Amino acid sequence: MILNLARRSDEVHLFIAQCRSASSSLIFQGMTNVYKSLFSCILGIMIASGNPITLKKELLDIVRKKLKKKELDIARNDWHAKRRPIGCGLTIHPGVGCPLQCSYCYIYDMGFYKYATPYSLSGLQLVVALLYNKYFYPTIWGTYLAFGSVTEPFLPNITVKTLEYLKAITEYLGNPCQVSTKMALRDEVIDELSSIKNLKLSVLVTLTSLHQYRSLEQKAPDPYDRLDFIKRLRKKGFKPFIFLRPLLPGLRIEEIDELIDQAKIAGAYGIVLGNLRLSINIVKRLVEHGLDVKELKKIVNVNNLKKGFIDIRVNGELFSSIRKRALEKGLIFLRRACCANTVTQYLHGLNEVICPTLCFLSKDACDPACPSQCRTKALGEPKHLDMNDVIKALLEFDEYKAEIEGYTMIIKPRRKVKDAKFISLVLSHLLRRKVLIKDED
Image (cartoon, rainbow, N blue to C red; front, side, top):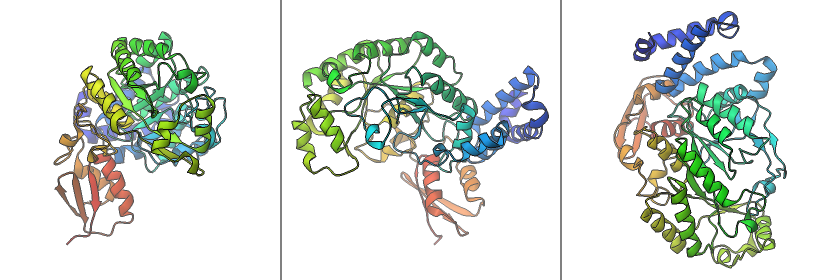
């Protein structure tokens, strides 16, 4: 039955419609284990193969009925329902604030506290909030989700919430998830992560220095404990990467060699470079903790920094040295966090995966040695989704022409489009091509 339903999407949609109509009396109020299992299977099939545009509406109809009105209102008005994705994806906050107080951390300049508080939304509320977000779309071909923006997601008092969110996202949405962490998790937590069915989690373990870390990350776990964590992750089937973030100007070549050697020994799949987000206060903290900032001063005039942040990306000799040494050791070298999420999906067997940020259009962002080879896969008509099905669902009519020129898709609607800029943004994201909406000739 399930295989037949998987082949015929109209029957799947009919089943989901029946589930929705029965929700008040059957699905969510004590239906049999067999029916629950069948419902989960059908939901999984839709997440794996459905049109993200139509599936988003259907999922919202299903899950919002599981919340009370007050819970629903809170979810709908939460920032997760409003935020736009950034380079690494749409940021997910299992908590706010962080007690680690790393010298280079930007969150304290944003007003966050030096202690962490678990986020108030339940896992189901988070799912609903995301489904209300106009920039978010579900499924493996939808929006990338990134944990670790304004807290450490695996702090002792945040881990439970992180696990709850990962389970809810995987069960209801199926989006690629990524965590960035400095913690060295216990085996029991790794086992719990591993037990989440269909979760192909991208894990970035942050390392900035093996020898200067006490000046940079006074309260974070020892770097060698983090390397041991990578080793244990690898044994459980994860595809961990070292996140060299921020890459600080002035890092000695000798330390780079040692760091790359240790990454290889630990079983990391590769290395991802990250920006240094700089502010006046961050520079002051780095100086106070004894860091030599003379190399930093060659890149930016720290005396003329104004309020707010600037992102510093290290290029040149240091960048080239890290890349060369990583590739020589057989490690994957990546320039963006989103690429690590993409490569993780690729390493798990999703061969058609392509970065939704279209970073492959920039030679400065996409490394030519990346195994995913998004530039090659993004040529021609999309293979991962039914292009016309997605376009029609978003335009809400089927009167248009679609032309593909290299990495660009040009759509010429025969009717007036209300918000062409937004539609271009969404279609570019889902179809993994640069999409332009133009008037018909």
